[in-house]
Length: 291
Image (tube, rainbow, N blue to C red):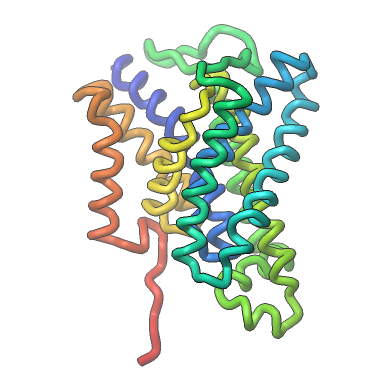
């Protein structure tokens, strides 16, 4: 029983990380309809920012996290200005390909600045792991889980209860109609990229004490976060969280009872099955079309 619970804890840990990346995907998708494949690099840069602020500049934790949030948001804005906005007139597919190029560029810049070695940041909370039926749960993992739930609730409130959130969603549905009713589409898109970069960077800062950080980690994180978003239903924040947790649990259990070698293959096999069986995702809704 202790072994099973330990594998579940490991799965929840990774699932919470994938959920945070999936939420970042949804933020941009809900305003532009674009899948940003540089999302994993936003997470990686958050970890790098925190490393520099804490280990090199020796700033306190709270100001460091605030600066990481702002820095991630600025990276998101730069991504919109440098990649998405110039390519918008060429269509969604071209913009998506542009985000792949942005991902490669960010990875190369990070390697030049921070090097190739994995970097570590001290945990935010000290103390022995919490014990449950012979299994140990790290306190930092609890922080990541709490952060995931908090961000999901804040995003739900933003999109469902505020006029700005409704305006962002309107931009995704039909930008021309949004302009006609007076919504500043460019501002809404910029806001979405800022929030996506900021949330992803903050997620990266929280997971660095658990997983370490290195320049190439964003690629796999981005793919797994994309899987989480697709599994739950792209654009659905609760779905992204559930998809991420499901993906993490499958990885944790397969690593424990089969082999860690196959955990990535199992994740992408699940994605293929979901796309065939239910393309709109677990919580996604099918779209009707008048004929």
